[in-house]
Image 1 (cartoon, rainbow, N blue to C red):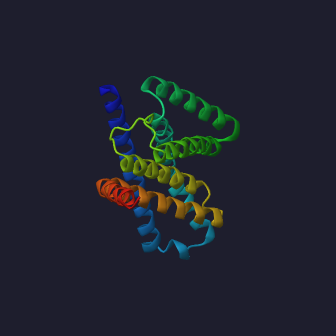
Image 2 (cartoon, rainbow, N blue to C red):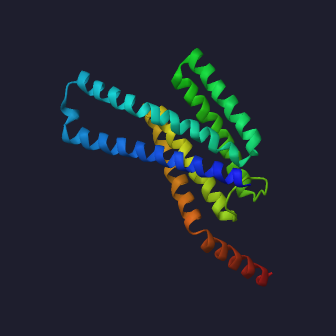
Image 3 (cartoon, helix red, strand yellow):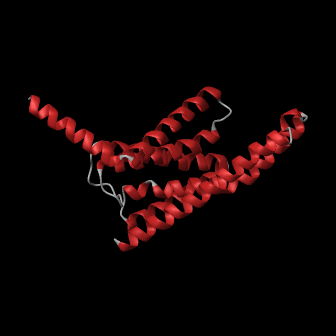
Amino acid sequence: MRGKSHYDYYLILATTVVLFVISVICIYGMFYFKLAQVHQLPVAEKVGYMDSMNTVMAPFLIALIVLLGICVPKRLLPTSWLNRFSVILVLLALAASFIWGIKVSLALVLIVSLALQVVVLFMALAGSKELNFEKKGYWVRVGSSLLHLGLILFALDLFFYRYQVLHLVLFWITTASALLGMVFCFYAESFSRLVKKRTEQLSDQG
C-alpha cells in the first residue's frame, strides 16, 4: 500500500509539472502572437511560427499522453499488472510510431486511455469498490474520473483542432467534464449531505 501511495504521488507530481509547462508555453505563445502581430505576417512566416511552437510543445505533449496512459489503468489494475501494462503500451506505441508515425502512435495511446477512462467513470458512477482510489467517497471518485476524462479529451482535441465541428464538440465536452470534476471533488461532502437529505425525505414520504 505504501508503494502504491508513492507511485500515485510521483505520477501526480510529474503530471502537474508537465501541465504547468504546457500552460506556460500556451500563455507565452498567445502573448507573443498578439504582441508580435504574427497574424499580420505573410502566410509562410505564420506557418513557420506555428511549426516552431508545435516543435516546442511536442515533447511535453508526448510526456502528458504517456503519463495519462499510465494514470488511467492504475484505477483498474494492481501495481504489478500496471507495470506490465505500461511496458506493453509503450512497446505498442513505439511499434505504431515506426509503422504509421508518431502522431498515430500518440493517438493510439490516447484512444486506449479514453476507452479505459470511460470504463472507470461508469464504474465510479455505479459505486464500484474494485477501483483503486487513494481517497474514498463516491463524489470524489466520480469527480476524479471526470477530471481525468477531461485531461484525455483535452490532449485528444489537440489532434483534431483542424476539424472545426469535432474540435468544438471535444472542447465543450472537455470543459463540462473538467468543471463537473472540480465541483464534485471540491464539494464532495456537500453533495453527500444533499443526497443523504434527499434520500431521507423520500424515505419519509414513502
